[in-house]
Length: 299
Image 1: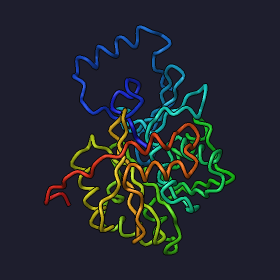
Image 2: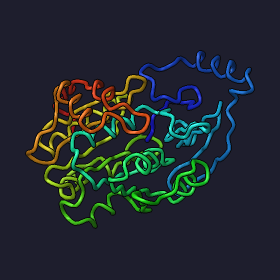
Image 3: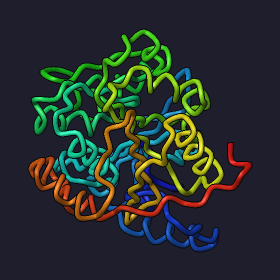
Image 4: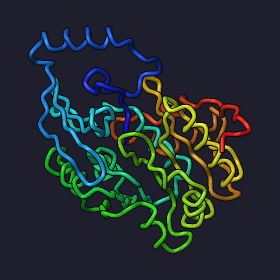
C-alpha cells in the first residue's frame, strides 16, 4: 500500500530515493499554500485501534495516510478518474498474474482505499480476490471516501492476515499479495520466518508470494529479502518502481520456475494481454532489478 514520504501532498508518487533538506521542505510547503487550488485539505483525521489515519485532498487527488504525522500514503485516487494510476506499484502486482496465467485464487493482505481490488473487479473478473484487512476503520473509510465496496469477484474479510492464513487449507491459494503496512513498515508479525513458512503452506506448489517492500527502509528491506530467500530456498524476482522506492518481490513456491529474463518477462506480459486497467504490463516487466548482495548478518 504505502508509497510516499512526508509530507504526503509533496510526493504522491512514492517514497523518494533521496531525503529532502528541512529548509527545502518548508519552502515547498510555502509555495504550495500560495496556490489555493493546491492547498491540501484534511477531510478526515482519526484514531483507529491500530494507527492514526488521515485523508487528505489536494488538486483533485484524495489520499489515505497512516501515522501520527500522515507520513505514509496508503492509497491515492483521482476524483475525476478513479482508475488513474497515481501510484506505480499496483502494476507490478498485476505483473505477477502474467507469470502464473492459470492462477485464479488470489489473497491480498491490506486494503487501503481499495484501488487494486477496484481494478480487479472491473478488469479481472475471472480472478477471485479475497482482501484481508485487520482494521475495521480502514474498511469503512475505503467505502465512504474512496468509493470501494466488495462484490462480484472481490470479498473483504476483517481479520489479522496471519490469523486468516492459519485457518486456510494447505495449497488453497494461487497468489498471495502482501501489501500490509502499519504506518511505519510491514507489521512485525508479517515479517518473520513463521509467517513466510505459513505462506508456503497455503500456496499451491506453483503459487507465488508477492511482497510490496521499500528500499527506503534499507536494513528492513534486506532482512525481508534474506528471510524470503531462506524460507523459499531461492532469491525473489525483484521489480522496482521508477518514480518511487517501492520494490515488488515475487517468489515461486515450488519447483516450477518463473520467467526471470527480460525477454521472457515481456513475452509473459504480452501473452497475458499486455494490460490490466491503466497499467501496461510490458512496461512493468522492464522494471526488473538485480538481487542485492546480502550481508551475512541480515537475518
